[in-house]
Length: 254
Image (cartoon, rainbow, N blue to C red; front, top):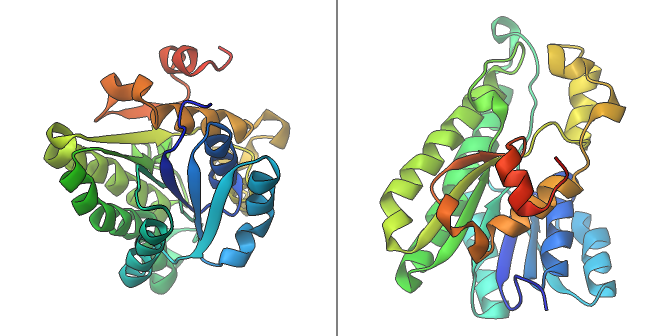
């Protein structure tokens, strides 16, 4: 049995990238997974892999920028499994990439709506349940962009900076009531988002060769570990996969 046996975990943005890798790792550790994505059908491949490996999961359509959709997804998870033990707020977008002076206001607002408001929606919908049971884990996917401005990424940096403060505020309000809250920066990972970034040619991140990007399996292992009781002493913090002490505890190469 894995370290997360009998737990129920929601992963948003689960159709690809870090979300998909995390869902597979969590299932390997024994958790039952809600694969949340804008289209449930986009999770079919991940769902099939989990089931073929003997795991249990289902896919739910959910646009995290729509609070009613988030509530519905959480209700579906409760109806199916009768409990929820962790929420990983992973869904995110990098677009629009470009100068503020020429940016499209609607696209800029959409980024904030997904990357920041989406995290609020997930937290707002799940927190009353976690508070009532005096347990639960919320992990918000952060980024170095939360702390260092990047040319062309004004929306993404602003949204992730907001997520950092959302993590701290949630931990302040719920941390002493049994809810463990983490921010987690997964590093520069080989995902479809990086394809978009490289194509833009803007800022230093776009110049990183693909062969130098990290595999999504590393942050996936870290996320599974953070969902376990082994990470209890780190609750309330924003963590980085680059931190050597964290890597040692997770079991990642240094």
